[in-house]
Image 1: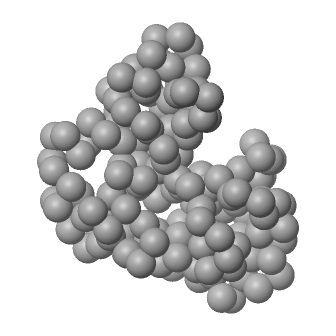
Image 2 (image 1 turned 180 degrees about the vertical axis):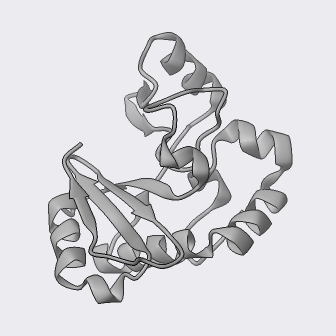
Image 3 (image 1 turned 90 degrees about the vertical axis):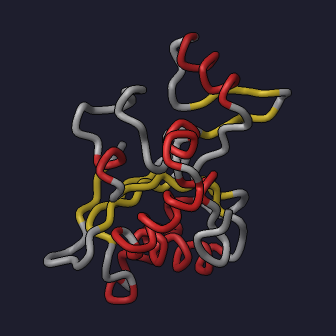
Length: 160
């Protein structure tokens, strides 16, 4: 189910949250309470000029196998790398820090097909007024973005 022009509920939410609340309820809640997260995704997607992946769970079985194997951030299904826990996380599958902002619905880690995440990060820093909701960023092979309803200082940059 689409929640914006290019973003689907299944790409942003952990599959167990969708199972618990349903895709329609997830879509309504994120639009109402975290519209700025969706807006920021669309801005970055437009800047990249290509599809941008948040989560790609494949199926929940592949996800469980990755957790069981001790690799909570990614898995490989049929030769294709799956990206997991890059959007809205579920507290029953702890990944990252105990108080990860992903649990609070204010972060996403973006995977680009061909564009370098560092290029996008620098563009955003150079044009920060155009991205009023980004409060913190870091990049390596992906771009981690933390957002808020309104930024009150410069964008904080960190190295993951």
